[in-house]
Structures are given as structure tokens and as C-alpha cells.
Image (cartoon, rainbow, N blue to C red):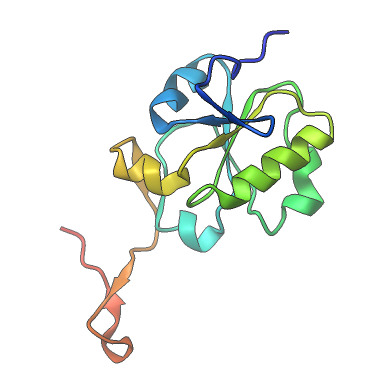
Length: 137
């Protein structure tokens, strides 16, 4: 079986890193995005693609084995710290097709890739005593 990530430009210590621009074509080839962010983060904004599994990094140690072994997995968090650790863990447990999203959701969002607004809006205000929900335009 060919590794879907073998043509990725960045590989460090055996872990493939995919750039946001590489994700959608990889998803079209059968990869699945694994969002490791917490619900409080995904309730504000999430990846605007259909092939997403939500598994927070806090639950990862208990539920890693629920991830499909036969699918190429792109692990993502906010900036790429947890996803790197999760990729190494999965590789040590027999997962072959694993990659980390370089820069995480922050890079994805900054680069203008699809996002979905969640049920919560970010808060804003000049000080903690004046924080209120950000108004939708």
C-alpha cells in the first residue's frame, strides 16, 4: 500500500507534515482530518470540510484506538503541538499513514481555507469586566 503522504515536502523525525494547501487534495484521495482541539475551540470555528473526526487531545490517550487504522489520518490542533505528539503515538502503535497539519487550525484559517462558524461566538471587550459576545455582522 502506498503512503498517501510520501510526496509531502516536509518530514521531520519520521513524521510527515502537510501544509494547509495540501489537505483538500489529500482528503479527496481518502484521507481523514482528525481535529484534536477541545470542544470550546471547535464551538467557535471548525474545519469547513466533511471528512473530520473530532477527538480532543485530552481524550486521545483513552480513545486513540477508535481512529480508523486503514485510513490516512491528518492530525490537527490549534498550532501543531498536540498533533505532532499524537502522530508519533499512532506510529508507535502501528498506524502507517499519519501526518500532522503544519501550523494547525490557525494556519488553515489564516490561509483562507474553509471554516465553519460554530454555535458560540468569540468574546471581546476592552477588559474582563466588559466582555460580551462578539456581534455577528
